[in-house]
Image 1: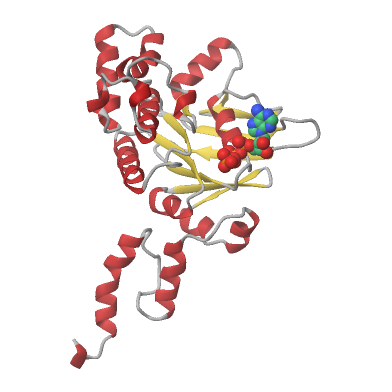
Image 2: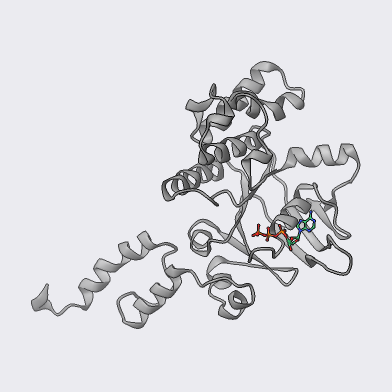
Length: 286
Ligand SMILES: Nc1ncnc2c1ncn2[C@@H]1O[C@H](COP(=O)(O)OP(=O)(O)OP(=O)(O)O)[C@@H](O)[C@H]1O
């Protein structure tokens, strides 16, 4: 898989005259990153992802791959789709074949690949998403969580350099979220750049190595601890501070955790606690 740097600069998009959903939004996605895109309902996350995928042409600004603007010709967009794949929020907007294997093979077949290569890609994508056992199942029989993962497998089978996932964990139960995150971790380990949109600030903190917040038509991008610890920005974006940061800061105040960077998730906090608590106790109590 070759790697590319995907970026957007100064995007302006408005669906109705006089209003702008994106108003000068810029985002940079260096290769191999795990980027979480956050923002309130209606802030423009999907709109931004659709611009990045080439599905939507901004009124102003541009999307570039390695500094070269994406050509809006049929050929240019086809070439772009081999670099960038977008998975929509609702899997039923994406799945339309009778069986799982048929659905996941649709993209690679369209690329004109020979059958053995298609079969290999389909098997690999289903395995990465942890749905290898579903290959022969009719798509309409699958649970919502399974359909979401099959839809992602369809994009993965195209072997894109950048995978854009619109709310891949929305509507999933906690176990399905864990399974989806494990699948994303396998994708990251296989070298893909993954961008996901979510409302879940704790998930973003735990998973991402870069965070971007869509607010007021623009994007604020940075390290997860910096962005998700910025209360003024979070209030403007109608997002909460991650629980892990709130709890971690309080534990530091109480002297139960050492100063410095906090663990990124609750298991990490818990793992850091016993020694810290132990160190606080008088020797007679130990
Ligand atoms: N095709 C469209 N026609 C008209 N307005 C649209 C269209 N698509 C999106 N919008 C409007 O643009 C704004 C941004 O929508 P978008 O779906 O990008 O937000 P979002 O951040 O993904 O929201 P959510 O978190 O609720 O999925 C919303 O006000 C929405 O109503």
